[in-house]
Image (tube, rainbow, N blue to C red; front, side, top):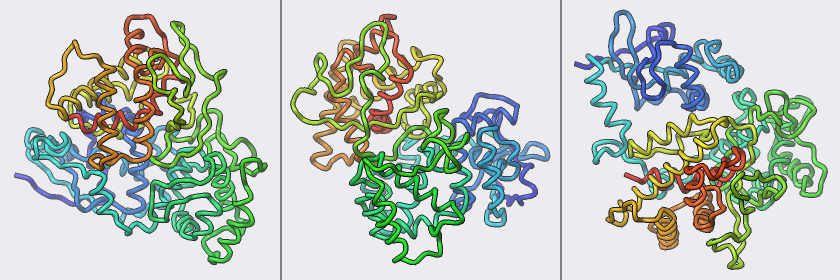
Length: 497
């Protein structure tokens, strides 16, 4: 029979991470478990959320008694975050400064650690399965669709834009994790709630309650203005701060931010060895420190520069067609300008999938592919390409079978199934049946255009050549092309039941 216990903060070490948790390889080494969880399971943002709002009262931990300890079977991400707030020295070296900064501001009295103790693992697994296996035939939780999410959010999120800007700034190396962990949310909210700051200063065309912000200026200009803002915010001698009045904030937008333009030599927030607004240097750290995962939040990119032909990697089998040019079998020659979701290039990115949590597929086989791809690093571009091929085909074939009622086999060409699925999705989007965000729509159009181009690195033709040892993709080119289409691949994968 289940028993509920409240664990005090000074008893936190009585809770033990599960050695056999599916989120990591089985191991009895606590340090290794923590390392894998931080690396792959987005523990840092979870810890930040716990510091800001606490633990959800809607979810308790689940565990089983083991002597004087309780082995946590459900809630290992949350427990890892709490352990690192309790003792930041346990964190991996790269992330340790962020946990140290958060621990300084964290009040453990704001969290209630409730554990449901079950008699054994089998009894716990009965409930864990229902939580983590997706809809599970209607028994498990069902994710809200886009309309339901929008209906729930309404106009209640007064700081949605500010939170989104902070996320963007950290991901792009404008600020560090330590800087974001400081109490700056209120100040940022006050500034972006001012229409003149939002529209004239930053060039944001959407409202203060819209997290998926859009821009009227090139993204490079927006980033320069954002860098200047945070540079001033962290400068104690600057007038930018929480105590300013609305008129002063508007004047700052007009007289400072709005003057930073495409052809203006603008002060940018330099990056130290750990990224962020520190001292003299470039806007972002060339070594990739504190730049996030190179992704851009959905619907927030405009006028991103395309890579030059000289910067594109060449494959030993054949040259890749430069982005936007017409290749064999492509539709790029119809005169329409294609604006892909070109994500910031991260040449030093180590892993193929930086955030596997974008994929929440209910299909256990596809989830296994995602997990394999998430740990494939830059030393294995061939393996990454092959796994990407498996993920794309498995996702699109499974989704197509669910939506069409057909069974596809070896005689069905991958490029035909994928392209037909993309075209059906576009029609459904137009009719309102499917609600895609801006990133997903752009990724869809890009993928549909190039899926039949034999020189496109993610086409079934090219990936087939890789499988037969006739093509050898460059890592940086491969991940850049993947980042462009990942939003629509993830969308399809998450609906491939």
